Length: 241
Length: 136
Image 1 (cartoon, each protein chain N blue to C red):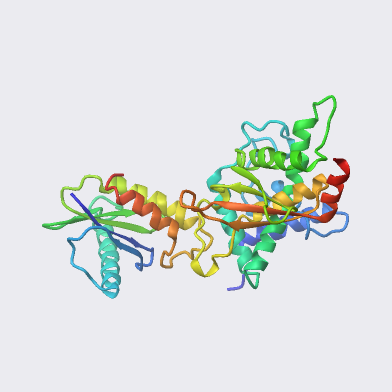
Image 2: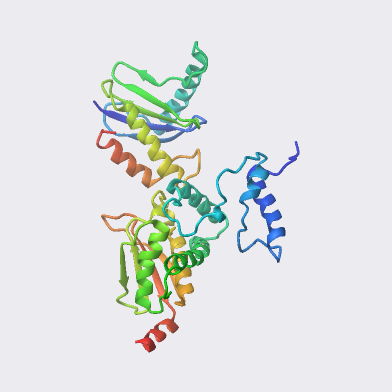
């Protein structure tokens, strides 16, 4: 029997993204940015339900108390993200790079939202221009915005002066992930590294950020986010001193 | 009172997880465990159709002279089977906790293939923490 309709799981994507891309995107391409497709999901599924809740885009950006996301729902989503990505890559490095890219897209939004929340009501809005306060704000503010708590430690590399590390003893996105032994160099926190990289790039501190699994006896899933800053950043720091 | 072993049977009747905790049961080869699980799957399917009063979720406890097996059937057809001594009272709550651990450490793990044998360190750790103490 021939399919009269596309598979329901794909129809959401194909129908909604196509139609909204035509309407909203001047270039007609939706490859880089996902477009809002919430209203068309219902029609694509064929069950037109009356929407009683306010649209997510109409909500107040500054209200954070009731806008937390279910950790379970996110873990299932992230699990699918990893599986989807894993099917399309050739190796662990490639997988980490792709997770990093996905995180980067979140990081750019996190930075924008954080600055808006912290500085919009301030009479003298400011932004971090020095390295250490920027690192501290990532360690505390970004982690609190994304994971609901500050990271556990922040360290400076002894060997290389352009390297800093943010340490999370129990990264929430990896809480239910057991990496098989043959892939033990993989750290799914590359996703978090992407978020951090975007925030540093956005603040004007270009850096290469990677994630490494560094377990200790007490914290088996301890993860180090390694930030390798570009030379220009350190040179500027010298001038600002 | 003792918990002897835990089986997880997928919806097709395949044994995807098997672990022994205490001595007391006959040691079987992995092939024999597979056969036992498949047989239990069949028996369970029969019991679910025997009910005189309409639909039934099938056998929940099967008791022998020296041990009993408690079966938890989930909404998706996965079965958790706990082999315990007759006096064990915590079998049902333990199975609920096992189900919870399964949902967390197996289903949320991107490196697990559904319906395939469970090889997840996280699940092993959770089960050890759960049954190792013998308390739910």
